[in-house]
Amino acid sequence: MPVAFLASIPSPHSGTIDVGPFSIHLYGVMLLLAIAACVALTGYRWVKWGGDWDLVFRVAVWGVAFGIVGARLYHDITSWSEVKAIDAWWAPFAVWKGGLGVWGGILFGVLAGAWIVHRSGNSVRLFMDAVAPGLLLAQGIGRWGNWFNQELYGKPTSLPWGLKIDEAHRGAYIQYTTFHPTFLYEFIWDIVGVVILLLVDRMFRIRRPALFALYVSFYCFGRFFEELLRIDPAHKYYGLRLNAYVSIVVFVLSTAFFIWWQFIRRETPADRPRAKRIVPEGPAMAVPKGRVRSGR
Image (cartoon, rainbow, N blue to C red):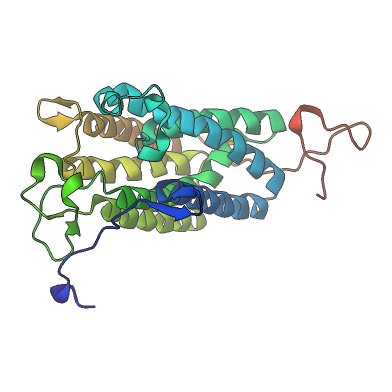
């Protein structure tokens, strides 16, 4: 449909689907789809590099668990006023109501995943580059959960692709009906980023984990401009939202690391490790430290 004929992008009137006595939160469904997409892309890349699916699944289990904890913890710390507004003892844990900080999720998830990869005897640096496109893909897909919850949208707009928000979700902007669909902007940005990362990894000799640093820089660059559009409650300092400052700091650090690691630092053999399958010693049933048996 030509853009000129778009009146607005509609929003779902409910973020849940009732199946008998159960309510399925679509925000959670999108998170599951995001995780599945990340695992699929990471597994494809890791196995292609000589690794095995078992390690990918183990990293996914621990990385997702710690990632959710970290994401919610970051949200609770930086947006405590929103948590208190729920007025229930379980408010700090209410992930189904939204409120997952990507910064905390990535930090905790990467640390947990790195520990699992290290225990397997594989290169943490190599696995970080294997998972980078998958993480960005997951972040883009996960943003659709905000669409179902009618949250984290941008400033009011009359553009033909403006997002229509129900009156109950407009907050202080009750007089407006359409807003910038920041969830869609980030989704498109992230998908473009996935393509760029895959092309860069294919066309250039990347020193591991430079691709992961490039992923972080790319995401932070787009996230900064997204923060300029968003109007949800947030701590502000000198006119900028807290996450805008986080984006700037992390972008500068990751970009500086990428340039130094990829172009300035002297290359070593360790910069281009290979994935490997770990064959445990001992009886067939003895698989120490969670290491996998070859041929599974």
